[in-house]
Amino acid sequence: TPTGRETGVALFGDRVTRCYLPYDYPGAVARFLDRFRPAMGVLMETEIWPNLIHAAASRDILLYLVNARLSERSLRGYQRTGALARDAIGGFRAIAAQSESDAARLQTLGATHVSVTGNLKFDLEMPAQQIEQGKVLRQSVGARPVLLAASTREGEETLLLDAAQR
Image (cartoon, rainbow, N blue to C red; front, side, top):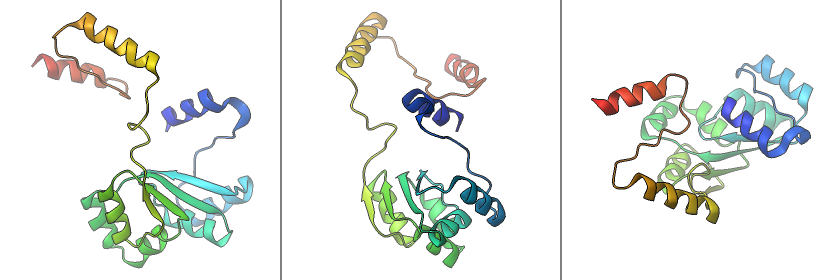
């Protein structure tokens, strides 16, 4: 995502090459892997791309699924695809699931080497300075309700404020 890309630039600058994955078509995936020749790949959350996973496995490229989540609804959808989903999910070297429930659903699909690691976006240890800044802000606001709209897209703040007024 653009936000993930910006975070990567902020954290690693030019030391890391960043690029978007192609659509999950065999030819596009093959050209991508031929060009970049990765040693490993890390996919996030629910990025289960069968052609990419198959092509990576055939080239001995290790793939990991991190911050993995899978809803009941998504599980039912993947189960309808049979061996396609089972083979794809089995192509990950390891999976780091957000919760026990996510891990169980991924294992139902055929995942192995699943660990529960929590949510990488929300289970962060905040620096003491930020916690202190939060306390100061909380005191300055008083008992009024506070609405935090994080990671919003263009125009969503207006919709939230309109809804809050109603």
